[in-house]
Image 1 (cartoon, rainbow over the protein chains, first blue to last red):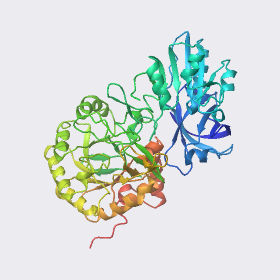
Image 2 (cartoon, rainbow over the protein chains, first blue to last red):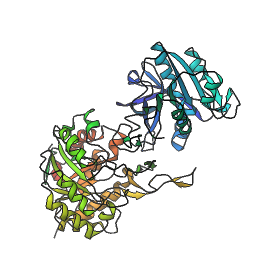
Image 3 (cartoon, helix red, strand yellow):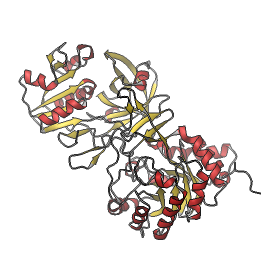
Image 4 (cartoon, rainbow over the protein chains, first blue to last red):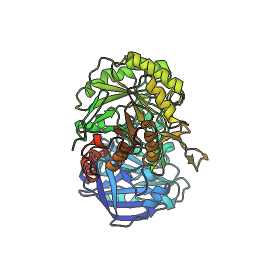
Length: 244
Length: 305
């Protein structure tokens, strides 16, 4: 964990209310798939937890959605501005030795799956990807996965592009029955995945105070009734571990 | 520059103490810096039995601060005694254990489980948590209940007892004096102020607990005012707390009559906040022509007749 002032290299819209920000970052080399950073915004006390979508040797990429005033402000930042960023944080996706995995991304839960896909490809694993969105204006990252040599199954709830329905509908439509899943997305999607799969990992979201395990702000409860810190024990948990 | 401060039970190498609830039991911070640089730290509050805490969301934002409603989540006093104490024993800093309870009796019982442990230098009674239904602030806003809990704990404690006061009262001096008269060795001012945020999408209060405690720079002037008022009306030492994030803030609290300070929310925003403040402090003291922390304590208080 480091606290660094990192320079914005670019900050561009890639879908409705969704932005891609590239940052020159001295801890980029330490970032693992599924980890996140806490971004400090001028004038805001509490940092914003945002997943690391991609990491090069000296750069990280964050893809974020405008959810409130803070992220709206973030979308106005020009290249050259420096942000205070704490990271990398949390326990990410383990790279498990399997022949084949399926990666599922839902909406703004899609970004961390890109770096995860790269790590699994590097480990010699066959990677299937399905991405779910509400409607075609919100779709992003199909070409980023294609650049890795993966053709993602695009799903939209309104059927305006790709398979109509959820990522699980998309897998069914394409006859993908791989039992090992890695996923990040909204709660209803993760609940459906937790009800369907027994093997794999999901990445959770929670409001955070610190992001490194001390304030107990983001705590959820596991199936044994024990508290788990989304920021430290997670955000990635084995499927079935956390009560959703 | 002499930064040291001596308080009941506490030989502080500097006046910076990490505040309860922002520091866990120190483990996460020990991985990023030597806790020996701190004057001391206060553990997360411990209750008799494990508590699961409040429903999500537990964190909200506020201008120059934050709201929290954790709800005293902790693993209970036996866990602390068996699992955390061995870690606390290895730390070269003054450890203060924060005690909470849902009744006056529970405070005494928790402390009785933690006696005879050399690594605990003092107890801090959290009678000011605004986020629990029983105990906490309900005790800390009633002078008689404050006196009862202090007397109860003083009967069993083998270390000095500090009382962390709630700012959610009409007259904090009355509460402070009740604690002093009941035998408190020191006071900590202040805990969080009760607040609320709305979620515009759901048209409901944002936090799972409805209300939460406001902390951060937003509450610093209130904390300073309360330290200043109480310092003129008690004869036991005060540890100042509320929105401290740099050495200038520390100096303000010292001037107002605090003998040391606790840093809370700043730890969450910058995990290195405390060591940075400690590094800055000699320079800031020198800038205002002070030769020691001691010299700054109470400098702003009216001279007693």
